[in-house]
Length: 341
Image (cartoon, rainbow, N blue to C red; front, side):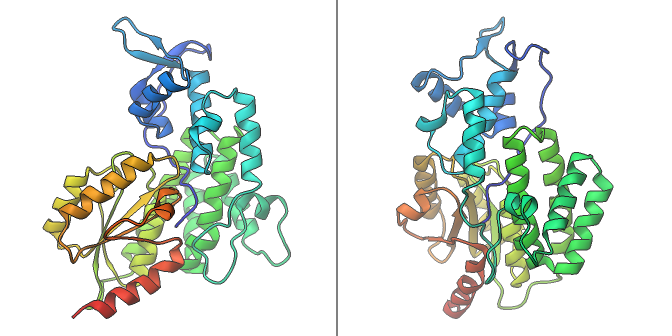
């Protein structure tokens, strides 16, 4: 499925000007980084980082400096690093490691017969004939200028020019990578990532809504993530490809408890559940959640998964089909249709 999703849920709260002064609650850090409270507590014990202060009630408070380090760590985890390699490293080392990772990333996924260059390569050294590099750069500059109207207009025009499928795979996917790299390098703030994500989301939602009613032989697909997964843009990109194939899609957004997913499947008569997992998720949470969900669903309901979480490729789980790219959606749907009475 798609590259790491750059969006981070929740606003940044205010804190003292002193970067070393504690001012962020654990709930705020969870919202701004996507790292769960349990993960932060485990790292505190296992790696002696982060080291929060305490407020008058004994609740954890984190400094801006620690929050910035945690943001960098989360980005590195999303790009395949393990916690033991990066948790607790100084800010400068994390940035250096992020630059190395950004320059040596796997091929972006979601393309149909064409390799999608990483956004940094496309913008810094555009190859001959790569007509999308200027559009990627233009969108990035609009994010930096905080030009909401200009960004929405540019994205909407790209949809009209490219069509939804190419818009997602050849513009949004590498642009996601560029936004993530810029955040890693300190060239973008969290609110700018949020602004970008909401702009793309609005354009994709409008595009999906214009596709019309699903066909007779189309499955009803429910899309969501587990409670530990806060990334949602990649899920919406997958929904776009499903809708283009005529599926009747119902998105619950992110962070839905497993029992609620099962209840939603029953209430809406869903035949396929699509879930997305980023690289930083705990493999035990992923496998346990998928096992629990499989046990709660009727045998005829399929579970499709994708994302960068390595456990999806390492372990075969009962009732779970792993899709390694957007391009895998079409053949999977063809297979599903052939199995229907």
